[in-house]
Image (cartoon, rainbow, N blue to C red):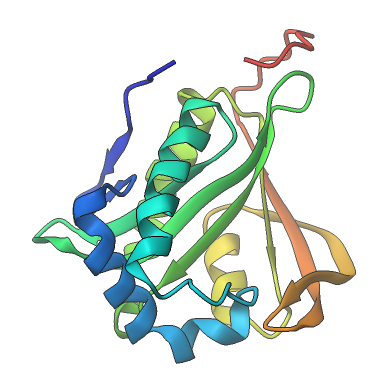
Length: 195
């Protein structure tokens, strides 16, 4: 199976799967934003900041998309299409009677507060609902991450509860506020087979 790889465009952004030519840009993004991202993300493997790691990871992400497991994109400004400013992911995609996934995202420190992520996420959620036929997109954020909470609220995500010690972030278990956005055009076919 070799599906068309999505490229999601908005007025200012382009989101796409990485290719091997992007490895240096990926490394630059994560190195430049390491201090900014570390408090909100899981601990990284020892070789995370190496080209060898990302050469393998780029292919793994294409394979995961082809198998319907995830869609993990990098975010670019349209006017600078070789510079990564963020990442946005639909992870743990489940089809059948659930038709849901988990949303993840990060944005460069220098690009915070300019509306890039909200713009890109609208396109990603549309793709998830319309092209991947998802019914539910779930997102969880740490209570102290007010910027993320406000973004999800603006996008229409509803709070569903709080999960204690939900995810191991930067070496310690962290509570998370659980939210979801449900497809406004639900199709419940009762199909229990994976697509």
